[in-house]
Image: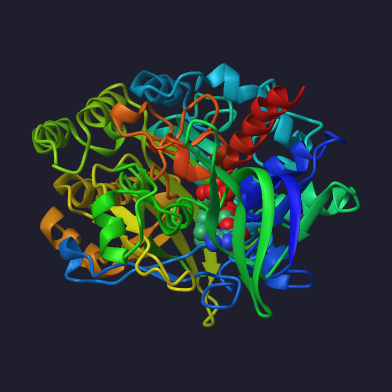
Length: 552
Ligand SMILES: Cc1cc2nc3c(=O)[nH]c(=O)nc-3n(C[C@H](O)[C@H](O)[C@H](O)COP(=O)(O)OP(=O)(O)OC[C@H]3O[C@@H](n4cnc5c(N)ncnc54)[C@H](O)[C@@H]3O)c2cc1C
């Protein structure tokens, strides 16, 4: 089977379907998307956000194991990624939040030319349809940073328990501040949580049902599911430079080929690198191990892997003290600077621990991270949710995180067999500050639960439990209990080649090629202290605009 398209997009996920749908607005341009997973149609674990943990270890989850983590007693962590049309937007937590303006400044200063807040803001807005009236908790704010005509519905949880208004928000205000909008580029403080959710429902708004299905009848847009791309097929231009002629892919029926003028890799931060490496693009040492001939030497492919860490801290609430609502997920979230989470004395210890840079962390990123923390950007997200128990009691779950982590790892293809899972070593906790800081964030929840009015309804601490008192105790508890935010970035960084880049920040074109791009979260060079779906949509929108200009 062979066909020719102007653009072939590898991966029908968050950024991939966004860029494909936008490109197909040009009637004279043909676009194909090859997605390894199925359509997901009729799967309630995708559509109903209350089921958001049920996709794990089912066919719509790649379920990618890490290597044993040396700094976590050899623990193997299973990383989630959506394997279905919609990609990770089909299985994620649907928290909608954008980076701090200062994080874009830091990323641009690393060398990502054009990655300014103002440039991204137009694409955040373009992808969003915001429903401010659904805010039951704070309301009456300034929504000028939002979009009202885009495909992705953003609203607030509904039928929210009165606990959040009566206890959570006043307690947050007693310790810090409530902020009016978590998506306006100044996200410090407590918030009423924004979600990619159809207003007044439990239904997830994600890239398949909000960008693609409404446009699926376009004649110039073809989406192929259950099609795993194995590699790029190369030709040469008149100067002998590598030019992609298309891709090869596998289905149940065998091998297929799609010819293309341009290839866009959107397989996510964990898997676009695999397609590059199986196509002979990457670090020669890695390719040699795989037995793959080096077509384009690009040593940065798969390096600079970043993620954030978190853990659930659990408190029992006094019997009968709280009336449950029927909200989908944490209706209140806080974005806290290290200066709030740490005492003055601990801030000094933090400075001391951070004064040594780890070998895996590039110097420029190290300097940027130090400044983000010193300037008081969010270093901990704290999600507040209630969970009813079978015995009729209610637990308060404070999900606490370490947002700007210093550990860096890698992801590489593990075999020349395209069906083999990638090798991931995120090197979690290899930087001392990551574990130490998370232990302090856990301890900080005790300040919260001993502050009124919340203190009056707290019964006891269940996890880790009051007997874990010192930072060392809590660190020990964290090793088997920490979880990750699944916000992978950095492996195909949009930076100058000499600064660790894999793609050009303005064109998204892979260095050494003229017609292969990467458009997914892997291009984000430095992980901002927030969730990443908003950026994935903005990247898809931005890349489409950049590419459209080349077509006109
Ligand atoms: C469990 C989980 C919870 C999360 N929670 C949140 C949240 O609450 N809020 C938030 O903002 N972000 C959240 N995120 C992160 C966010 O969803 C991702 O950062 C974002 O969706 C990634 O988009 P992407 O386009 O880079 O990749 P993806 O959306 O993962 O798309 C990649 C696509 O490529 C396909 N693919 C891979 N390899 C191939 C191949 N060889 N051939 C063909 N297709 C291939 C995959 O099947 C997938 O569909 C979460 C992520 C996960 C996994």
